[in-house]
Image (cartoon, rainbow, N blue to C red; front, side):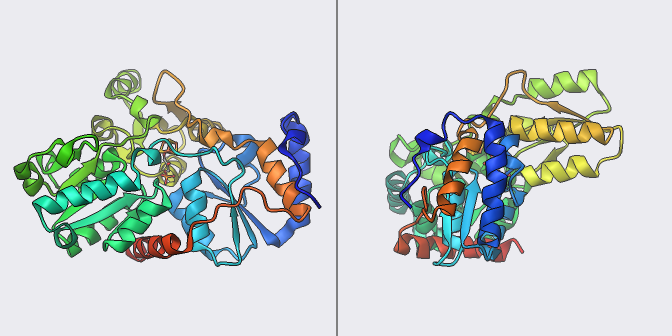
Length: 364
Ligand code: 13P
Ligand code: SF4
């Protein structure tokens, strides 16, 4: 059957989509798995067969037997699913516009330039392990694979950094400076030994001496969603609820993480709140869809969940995945058409696989 146009789906309301999604899923049965990141809106999240943080979902993608892996998340997640799955499996992203603005802050030409300029100051391939946060394009994971580097996620960054330092003395960490700094500091690396590489300046705007002294060279990237959280928000919460606890995602700025009781991945945040006693009160520094869902579930369990920022910090790209797009890709699969496949170039996928594989080994 010819490809069903999205035009026939865009005007459907969520309730109409819901019913048809359930039917299409049942028709496809075991041929399909839907993976849903914790930041997905409820109308989509409810259809996920597996939910989780980036690490958990990567593992799930590598273990899945399904012919089709629909990733309700963002572009780099579907790329990882494609790289870690078998060649005969197909990774699909319901809306191709669902990117990650932080991932876009590092690209291959800029990272290769940084590596060249670092090589002018030291023997980069002998002295520096490149680490890319999983929130990055496949060609950056391939770069790490080529240069003896590795991928990390928010839940294994410390283990990955420890491995990296067992290989070489220094680390180039991209694209998220906050995850790198928060993790490095927790490992005992002083702030003065973590410098920020400004990718618009020669040698990152750093002197030879600063580069030689640095243990971690942090890319000047960040998540605009987590950037909204501020230490004042924590102070206000603590003033009102002295017994309350605070948990933040490590993409939040350093001073926010320092003031938090707990710092961890999306999965960690959920587990921490779930494991807390009845009557607990939590302030949470991460994306609003996760927090709203957790607040609702926690209320039923006699716990109180508050959102950290006074303004809504939503990941607008995660929000691109809506029931209309999910239904559109599903009904096309039922009709025998694959739309929105994510396919990483074979050579790139092979090199990226090395860096992802290393991450999975280190984090077991
Ligand atoms: P997690 O791996 O903790 O789910 O984080 C992914 C992400 O993009 C957070 O902004
Ligand atoms: Fe990217 Fe931030 Fe959205 Fe996570 S929350 S997917 S880092 S833009």
